[in-house]
Image (cartoon, rainbow, N blue to C red):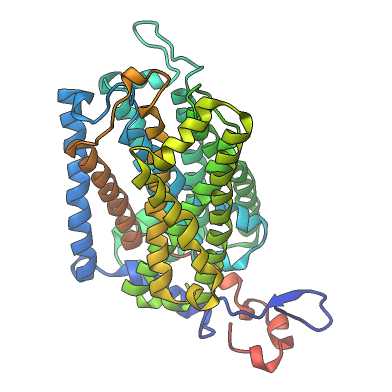
Length: 472
């Protein structure tokens, strides 16, 4: 639905992007107030969440230290399952980080204004998730002290990395993705950091935010260069959304393991990454609306509904990929491929496979019902189920190793307590970084939110029908 402004030829969305028709000053006050409070006045919920997540993050460091001391034998890996939870968690966290760049870059290029209320903490979520993902390749090499072998740098033994190894491809892909995402995130924050600088009351904050804002004054020339830079970074980041998880999928697709050696993996992995990434953004957005009431006027139910629609589409793409895998395994006539997929569904790990199908294919069908798409508890529950299902998807793929070509070497993989606590610790690291972000940096792109308000263009606002005035 849309309303066309008279004599303009342009279309204005009639669904309000922000509730209450706030002025620019109110938007600045609402967002800045979240992180301008002194440390002594930090909300209790933040301290409780930060202490718990910090303890879990410390537990991750302890598990890494224990692994370095004892070796990978403390994990559940065996022969033939040489890849365990470390790779499962790596792919899971990389997938989580995809929604941030998609919301920021691709939706920006398509001029989707509804992204403005969620793009900032979606970008921050990307940074936190990629940091968590980067932990696992480093510890999966076994000898952590030679992790630098993953990088193409000269060393004292004249040993160079194997450029045919997918592990090295991951380093390049994820490293590039992190760099581009961090630049995009930081560039978008510069105008808001300048606002923090101008509102700061302590000298330390003025200096810190003054350095971070890079001398921003908001002049016409600065805005012109800023918009060009932001557009270029969006254009650079867009192909990364497709390429990074495609490269991650080749960790599996370039092998000769039945069930892995398939060309459907790149688009299948990209769709799954967007699916799980949007689910995590929705989880964080709903929690943010709950603990920070000021955000309820900006992260509206209409925005959440749009996210639910994207999740529904990508969920159907993932379900189509599941069915295609079975069809191709049957149609190809390859007995090993047929066995691999029948074993997934009815073998020792049947419980993981059907958990994956239930969470990723069956449950998201509830998004077809508009009332459920606009019910906060339902959205929150479905986002949690989606992330559970997407983790099990990676688990099911990796567990294909347990039944290889030689039946005499088949074995059942069981994670150990070290695997479990390392995974839980990665969530602690993720939440610790994210809590620090919402406490000390602008959680929302104030300048972009102001730009989508009707009052930002009074001519359009004046020509809107009376029923729509004051709603945006």
